[in-house]
Image 1 (cartoon, one colour):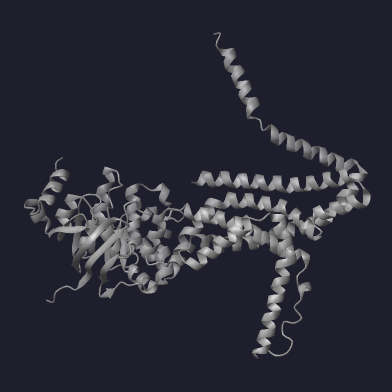
Image 2 (cartoon, chains in turn brown, cyan):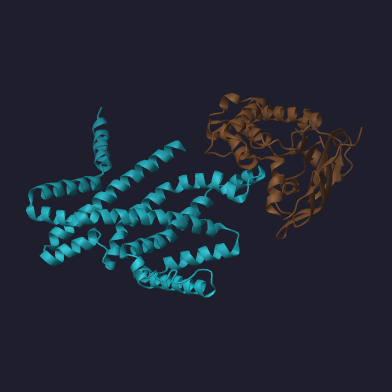
Length: 248
Length: 280
């Protein structure tokens, strides 16, 4: 068996917002099919790193390579690469003027050039996969938070992405809705999707993550397996952070 | 037992306050106007004379507004664009127009701007002939007469209102959260595609009432084109008053005409606003 290929390669990534140094030289390689969970205190650069992977934030310096494609300044190439990288946001960012179904079809039609029928067929398949086909005709404002986030996941999956990025997908949800979103993410992980998830859901990290990163002050402080991170964290900062979030 | 009368008093006062007295006033004016036009010969004569201008007024407002919408959308997109040239051009346009009285702008565009444009087109034609792209007299027949005064008036109103509408569109686009653009871009859509399919449909919906109000304002401002001798209802009523010395009949009639159009349009805008709010 050959080694799975590199899906994401991040090299010497720096991102500064004026005087704020969000990322200070991040290096990371994610192999195909791996699930990476990123944890760390707020302001540690987790979200910024995620947003640099699809260049929603353009790095100050450094390189990001997606499945062999080096991201550059060329807008067309960038758009093409972004279509291969699904992203799920903390606040869902569904399009409120479109129904759940239309949310899932619009980019398929515009970017992939699929016909209305084809796009709707794929959209229904994805809505079934996330468990809410009956909400196809409903507008986002009439959906619960958990349902909205699942539509957002379906919207990304309908583009047939090679990679899925999750930016604190359950942080804005009421407790009883967190599980329905995590279940969808678990299924995706089992199906072999390459995933990078910024989340503090430790249960998810334990059962789905192949690797876990602890970030602080714009750097990856520790990069190991979930088991090792929880049972014997090496860095003082990691220990302190874990003791804070696992106390209760 | 003794407490019920004060409550009913308060109720009566509330009801008095709740009545739209201003609207009742407008209705009274309309009733009086209809009665007068039906019974008084002088007013009938004035009405029949002035009504021929209605078509010009309505046509001018509709065409100018359609062009102003396109111009405003373009300039509004320019105001939020990251492209330095496009952004500054849009800003310059908006600031220039907003800094000059509309009446002066109408004179300027119709009597200075259009002739300059014609000169420019002619010079361009001469240049095309000189370098041999087109032969003979191409474009030389293109004189100032190609633009009627009504056409120039529409042109002037469209350019003026384009600047106002640009600010409305800009505000509308900026009212849409950043996450919408990010979601669109993360799906692989370009800036333009996200604008077209995601941002603008929401932005336009948010500013529909403001756009409607500006249309009402433009209907009133079409009166300014009478200074170019365009025969709209204002100009025709001036002509009527001048030739008959019946100032009262002329200006009552034209005022009632404007009021009818604007009141109906304002009510439509209010209905639209209420319906949009209900859907939110």
